[in-house]
Amino acid sequence: MTQETNLNTLKARFRGYFPVVIDVETAGFNSNTDALLEICAVTLKMDDDGWLSPDKTIHFHVAPFEGANLVKEALEFNGIRDPFSPLRGAVDEEHALKEIFKLIRKEQKASGCQRSIMVAHNATFDHSFVMAAAGRTHLKRNPFHPFATFDTAALSGLALGQTVLAKACKTAGIAFDNREAHSALYDTERTAELFCEIVNRWKKLGGWPVLEVETAEEDDSAHTAEE
Image 1 (cartoon, rainbow, N blue to C red):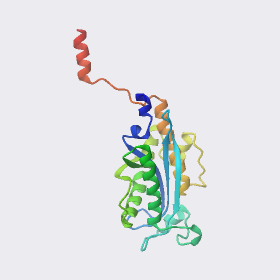
Image 2: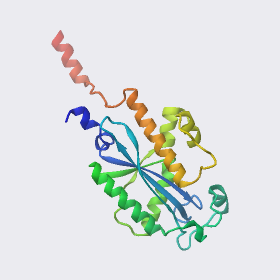
Image 3: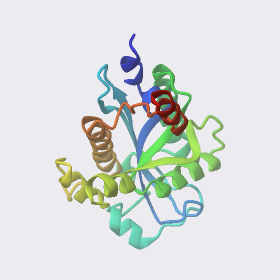
Image 4: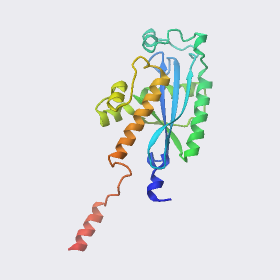
């Protein structure tokens, strides 16, 4: 296997991290007090030529944890009018996270990565809710890095000049239906496409693999030898 082929793996591309795209819908902004209501995760894969694409999707509607705060404005925003409706088919936080973490650990191991890293749009928000829910349910095998993330809002601002998910997707040529937005499933799938587009675009521009650059000392030695 050549050096170039070795670099065309998730393990090599992201320094041993396995990127997983996450989106959550919630009943507020405080991850410690407000309910987690929906969560979706999309794993990623890389082909032999180093092109990144979405892989597996797992999605759950989530029942509010006991004593959770429900902010009316948040429910109106995401369209979840009745979080307790049986029609949602919601599961508890523990079930949702156990299944998501199990899939992530399996795919992470298969890719040869040591740990997973969350990819999300305005990632601090999603990361805080996942970590808070994992803490409430006492899940010890959390595959995600405790604080590091890849934020597609920041990446989109750099690569596309847009920070809003819908506008970034449209600028990147990714179809986005505003009527479907604020569903964790829909937003995660679009965020996954966006992240892959940014990573692949960087590769097309020649930004990956990174070429080795001579250090200043090597440059000095070369000039000395020439003299």
